[in-house]
Image 1 (cartoon, protein in one colour):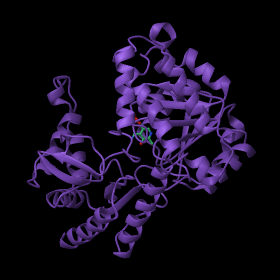
Image 2 (cartoon, protein in one colour; image 1 turned 180 degrees about the vertical axis):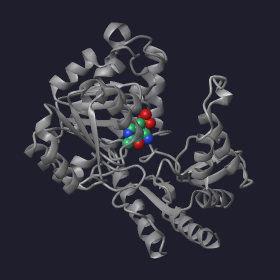
Image 3 (cartoon, protein in one colour; image 1 turned 30 degrees about the vertical axis):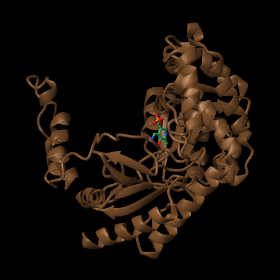
Length: 415
Ligand code: PMP
């Protein structure tokens, strides 16, 4: 088992002689894991180059496969309108902002994108940073400090965790989506801290379930805390026109203090945003290290995201189709008795296999049959929670989904 190999390597003694990278126990652990994966006989499953725009299909080694391994949920990456916008912005401004926006990197399209996002979400303003991961790290790391408390869902993304560590705040993970446990922590601890931040995600990226946000909002109001929602996988995908979790539940967007999201999934770009009150955004723009001391978003990425918002607003049916395709996949998989975990109403559908090597094997067997789908193993998911993770897009056809679920059930049976 992969984790046993890992812990064996971890226990290697650290000595002053072993300071080179090749001798790092952590590196040896990685090599041991790679050897085990290679022992399956199908080569390295990581860093496989995809030779075209990745959508409902992808091309690998000249071979076209049905693809479930992209965050291109609503088909914006490769959309001609979006590509044209990126090309036009490149002609006008070049390929880089070449400086922090605070100093001389600001372009008119930066503000345009921020205002569009604020309007889309329904709050005062927003700020764009160069990466989704960096946005969480710098925002949480900067806003909270050692006298504060962050209470985060136990399934939170690595970027949220890194931000928490950087902040130096006290940290408590509450059991996934368990608002009773969250309330217990709040009633027990709230009074000890001046500022408390609760962090949840819209759609959870490993399990495809959705936070019970209305209930979390009640708690945050009762206990007077800040609330942050990471919409990496929910913006553009859920809600009747794709406006994310606030539309899904029909809640007032101003009841959430920090809306966070990324541009790398539904918006065909690269970057992250925080949206909220004017005071919050102004404060971040002048003080958040990952913004102030980093380059502005590149012009083509900025223009691509603006175009993607426009296309989504003109074609909300992309989100509606995505939701229908995801439901079809989930229904068919469940009819076949496959374990889809907690996934509901979202484009992320895990097929839980349990054993790590079996999951890798299943992914590789599907690959041979023309279906590209990534596996997830420990430590990304709990021990014995290894799985395949299907990302549905609005471009998947009904036929592709029927075929995939049939082949999946067949291959899983064979294992
Ligand atoms: N938050 C969540 C929940 C994510 O899943 C991801 C990326 N998978 C990020 C933040 C980081 O976004 P990006 O990849 O755009 O840096």
